[in-house]
Image 1 (cartoon, rainbow, N blue to C red):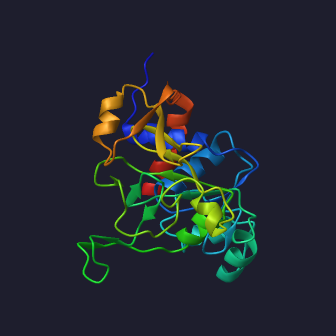
Image 2 (image 1 turned 45 degrees about the horizontal axis):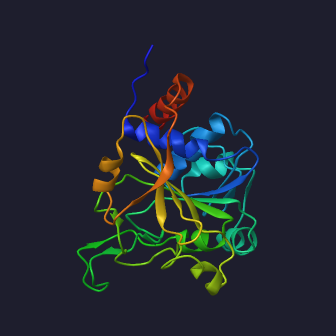
Length: 253
């Protein structure tokens, strides 16, 4: 019996699968939070979710509306101050994975959530801003990014570097003394991208079921490189879809 699913569901399930049980994850609101909470309900019950409002070990019964959602504090193992969550937990490298979204992402994993356009003072669009993302991108052990793929969002060079990925190529993070490995995985509604070990340029490593390479190329604002051994993402299972849909239904009430 075939199971039907949407591109967003494939993306969310693939992102959730990337999170390992027993690790800690600094979670961004939106798509990252959906994937992280799905992972905790499936294969990673001991995944520790950390939100920048100071909630450690949050176990929300529904998807939080924001980092200030009371559901996070009510279900957390502990609630600490914002300075403590950044100065004690994040910056010293105590968080394994940072899970972020983006408005723009470039070929080296740099994130823009600040402005669209060439002028900061007079942008075409002013975005929500940085929040804690720059520190997450700098200090977590590694960073996963989840976002829908199009030429508007996947650009050769971001209009503004809000959160540093790999700069302009391999070795830039090390030269700046950044603690974490930076973006190691980008999950989209079309496939999975990972940085080249030498150049750090994002390379297509997996295609979601039914997606052809040319479709991904056409949704990318640079000449996307494709791995020689590109794989196909396993489709979502009935169980994964059941839990994901249940989580979203509860959150819509």
